[in-house]
Length: 136
Image 1 (cartoon, helix red, strand yellow):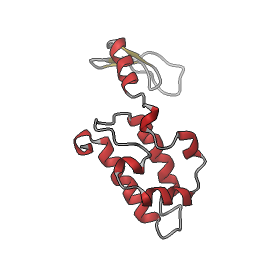
Image 2 (image 1 turned 90 degrees about the horizontal axis):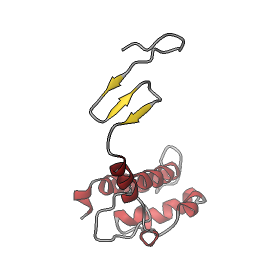
Image 3 (image 1 turned 30 degrees about the vertical axis):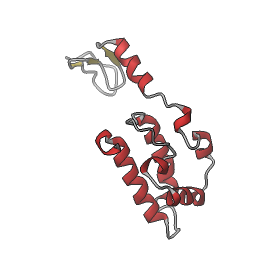
């Protein structure tokens, strides 16, 4: 449905079963607000599960990241988490940590000889932790 002139791009209304989009920037959720809140709360991380905080990670150098990843004995430790015996589901936090560590260890950005192995180990850890079946 055409919503008018006056913008550089036409505004089109599209509907799905749960969301109404009126442009690429606007959306209205038709779903259950409580379900959305419960999903957000389920992604809150218990500080006891963290081996280091995000603030500490922000100040790391590439050498510190390489040393940490090289010494990590499990996929959880690579991203600074303690294995808890239950699936880890805070994907937004995992992505944030993966991004920071990948920028520090990527072989194109880090000339150290261990960078390629560390980046591969980091990528494997992220793949495993994003899949609940492989976390076990």
